[in-house]
Image (cartoon, rainbow, N blue to C red; front, side, top):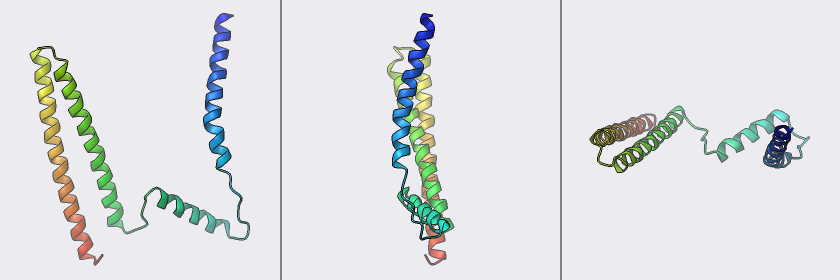
Length: 138
C-alpha cells in the first residue's frame, strides 16, 4: 500500500511538471488567423519568418553547403575541446600511474592532430567556396 501511494505521488508530481512546461507553450502558440488571405500564402510567409528567425538564409546552393560545412566543423571543434578536457582530467587524476599518463598524452596528441586536420579542412572549404562564389559572379 505504501509503495502505491509513493508511485501515485510521483506520477502526480511528474504530471504537474510536464503540464507546467507544456501548457504555456501551447497557450502562447495560438494566434488569430487572417481569413482574408490564402492559407497557403500564410504558411509560406510563416515558414519564411521561421527560417529567417533561425538564421537560415534563402540563398544559393553554395551558401547552404558553406553553412553546413561551417556547422559541421564547429561541432568537430567542440568534440576536440571535450577530448582535450578529458585528457587533461586523466592526466591530473593519474596519481603517478605511467599507463594513465601515457593514455592522456596520446589522447592529447591525437586531439591536436585532429584539430589541425579540422583547421586545414576549414581553410580548404573556405577557399573552394570563395572560388565558387567568384566564378559564379556572386
